[in-house]
Amino acid sequence: MNHNRKVPLNSLAKKLDGDRPKGTLYVVGTPIGNLEDITHRALRILGEVNLIACEDTRTTQKLLNAYRIKTPTTSYHEYNEMTKAPELVLQLEEGENIALVSDAGNPGVSDPGYRLVSLAIRHNIRVVPVPGVSAFVAALVASGLPSDSFRFHGFLPSKRSERLATLGQARVAQRTIIFYEAPHRLIATLRDMLEVLGDRNLVVAREVTKVHEEFVRGSISSVLEQLKGRVIQGEITLIVDKPLPETLPLAPPEKLKQEFDDLLAGGVERREAMKRLARSYGISKSEVYRQLETQK
Image (tube, rainbow, N blue to C red; front, top):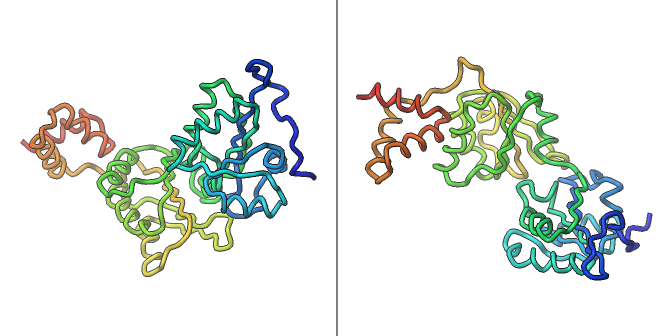
């Protein structure tokens, strides 16, 4: 297969601008670890487009070298996408075909890509998805936890107060919940999960599809014990089981009242304060009101 041959890829959907057809933006999924996890179609597209926009050109170049693809690359990441996206759209309008890739997985899923895709659509440029592997899907299907209904939250906030609020919103969801997390925050996050979610079943999927792939399974407390003293490295996906109705953690009334008073003291209106607490603890505003009434 010749991956370096440049041929028109948008012949089925030409958008004329004068006499010149616009190009096509291909959103291409790439391996999350094992370089064999890429489709024949993705390789063909990467070899045929005029340009590949990469989150990190050095990372993508390893993939291109492995398959002898010589297509030029350019950087497109979270720090330059404000200025880079318009430049790429201009090239697309001039008829060039561009492939958008991230370092691993599908662009736009916890990676840059949304801004370029939305801008291309606004300029009537054809956007074509080229599916590939996704870390959270791969981890979910191998976790052993229910996969019929789940919610993907992406990366948890690094700030603890925001992380607790996110977990509070997820605590009553009757479905499997999935997060990404940085390895250096893993232990702190698991402790926060234990506090907010209760001791439910959890799987820590580390380095999925890579040489040191690992799945640590058990209750949150037992996983914490298993990881105690270890230096955690690599990409982390957390898959958390839904709670049993009888084990749903309740918001401590005393703590709720203190937080409510603090919000009022900070100038937040009463209704807004109850709304924030409901969102933080994953309960209804009426339940917040009921618990506040018990503290009078």
